[in-house]
Figure (spheres, rainbow, N blue to C red):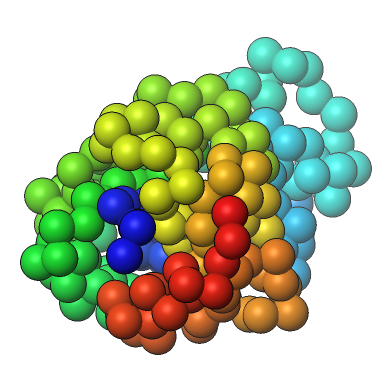
Length: 221
């Protein structure tokens, strides 16, 4: 097997923190007297914090100063951090620990590749920091997916070639970032949405080392 490393996106792959983003945005919208629901929240997926705030203000037909926008965005993040600081190991998604243990036994390195600056806190709260050999996150990279920076950084930190890496991603932009990095990619979610990935499963409980080897043999990078 030529694979020497597996790089995991965090949200939607290892844990589901999307609900906490929604709660924080909903709390801000309520404070601004703007109607905001789960359908509206779909528009924020994969969108930056400031752009997400602009969408909420657009929904409420509001125009505010840039300084106030920064204040609201900071408030939202403070609330989000408040929520994730209470996370527990029960919130690790199915199949994650089994796969990480299997990779460790096989001597395959592991890393996180996430834009979130809150990655270290989340990993610590759910108790899996020790499973990863490297963490490439918003604290060490600046370019957003589909730019491959975060995955290339993870490979660099692990001292492996991009072509020797599998990436696990649940977002279209993340899959594109993996491919742009020249890496193999397993999509976590729906096949019709993540159709550019080399292989798609609903969750990490649908993949193991044997399947990765089969997928690897079918890919020509």
